[in-house]
Image (tube, rainbow, N blue to C red; front, side, top):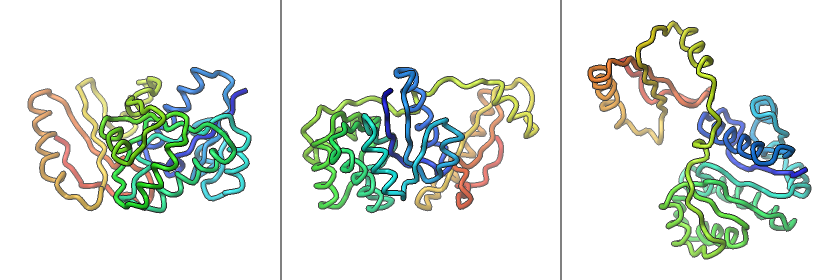
Amino acid sequence: MTRVVISGYYGFANAGDEAMLAAIVGSLKDIIPDVSITVITGNCRMTRENHNVQAVHRLNFFAIAAAIRRCDILISGGGSLLQDVTSARSLYYYLWIMKIALFFKKPVMLYAQGIGPVRGAKARRAVRDVLQRVAVIGVRDADSKAELAAMGVTRPPIHVTADAVLSMHPVDKNIGLYILKKHGITGIRRRLGIAVRNWQDHEAIRTPLPLLLTSCRKHRTSTSSSSPCSTRPTSKPAATLPAA
């Protein structure tokens, strides 16, 4: 049995991160049918129930160390974990997880990560020093590869792949139809759904997005709706947008 530990921003009901985790877990189970997966998460119960994996809490440091000590490989990612824009503490946290694996001589793989921005000189040196010792680096875009090169990361070879979500298994469309029907949306017309959220209090989206939806309806005879893409209680929609 192959034991894998996955580190990332999981268990916070963020749609994008949960989709990435689903994609990573699905890919691992396709390749290694008997794989045992443990996820470091902010909500163990949610992660276990939604992804059918084992889980340890992200602040239970002894449990994290024990899980990594037993594993065969640590996967870090996906998403933008190594950046210090939202928080410098989170960057050092994810580097610390990798350093535990390196201490126990476990291979570390960066999985389809988006790197940066990393602004602090000390933080950039910390990223370089840890990543120089990992086994595999996969990034989701060329800019991330260039950022690592600018930090001085020279090994291992950096592979440009794609966002992990692109490897998700196709979903049952009937589930989507059921959700739409539950909210009173029926018919066979083309439909466009857009998920929006606040990001650093940017307001620029409020004006062009309704115009875009109106244009879509005019030219493609589609109906549209919008909703926040995070289900955390503290999340707010970026705007209340009229259906086009």
